[in-house]
Image (cartoon, rainbow, N blue to C red; front, side, top):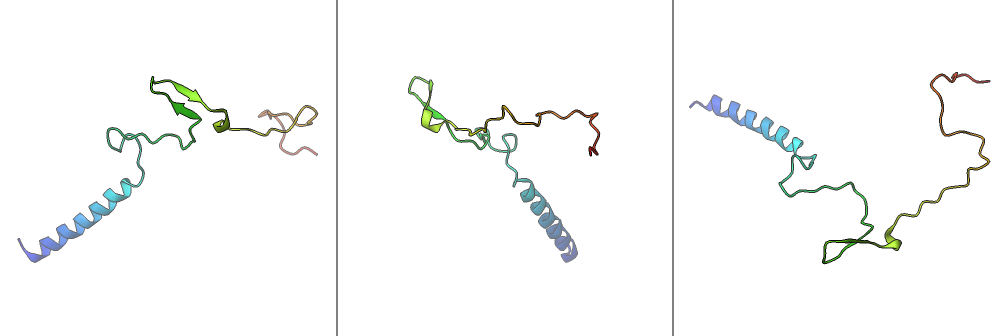
Length: 87
C-alpha cells in the first residue's frame, strides 16, 4: 500500500464519519435504540399507580384562558372565494 492511497482512504473515512455523525443529530424512535421513546415534549398530567392505572391530577392539567367571543365581529373561517382587496 502506498502513502498516497492511505491519505485518500483517510480523507474518505473523515468525510464518511462527518456525514454519519450529522445524521445522528436527529434522534427519532426509528433511529434510536430499541427501547427509545421520545414523546411529544409535553408535561405529564398525572401519575401511574402500582396496578397500572393512570390518575389525573387537577393541578397538573393545563388551564387555557380564552376571552369571551360572543359579540366578536369576525368569524373563525375565511372562504377561499373571498376577494383579497376589500375596501
